[in-house]
Length: 401
Image (cartoon, rainbow, N blue to C red; front, side):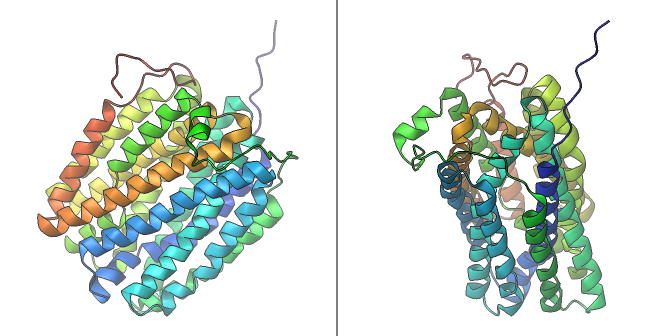
């Protein structure tokens, strides 16, 4: 008789990175669950301004990841960059309650997203560095689940604090500072980076030759990620939509809580399924779930909007960890940070386009047009998914990219 192969245990560093993400997301989502309403209702921003602000902020985070990923490859020190990124985000949190204009909110959001950009690619590459290939999907799913648990806890805390402080948004925003600094402490104490030699040959990934060297399988993942991003604009529009359909001000953070809770529940099991069955079915299912979410949000009425928000979270759980694992899987080991950086550069630019278009549709035609437009793009993205076998990404050349 032969013993069955033992599944490797999840590395401690993955857990520590997950809890670091959890705490930072508690802080960030306490803010972001209230920020769209603060901008639109209190400061008088239009949907177009909201889309522009959110698009620039998120695109900034993604674009900065290009350089942090390359630098982590070059220096061989991923943890150091992650600490800098998380610390910068922590120190920008007090700017939100101090802001008294759209410009100051924009500056705070912009600085916070720079911190996110610095930490994102090195952190994701570090997960791959410490995880055996046979559990890599589960590792990304676990980190994503812990991240989204924090994203669910943050809005719940915001709701309780809004009740305690009689809808005083600024007082609630001050409490978001605490978990942000706790995240930095967990990262410093809990994460151990494996020894890794610097890679002085790593060059800025904005060069065409570097992008070509990453290989055709990786480039297909980038195209696929761009298609997904265009179909999914800023979640700030979900918050504003729910409030417009009758959700009281105090309860608006529940939008992010509901979305994040569904996301968290789905992410880790999705990673396990990916390790066993491959990514294709999960990605297709995720896009059809996004279409259903958009249709519910377009229909209007608070019950339908809440159902659409839950489906949006399910879409995220079915797709985000899967795509991250595909990036890691199709990139050379010594260029993983660069690969995540290039991926985030492309999707960052698409994030800006998607959010600006969403705001323009909202202002010029109406909220329903924003979500119907998203549904159309999701359907288009379905045909861009190449076939996949096992854990690899193999292209069916009958599919036109």
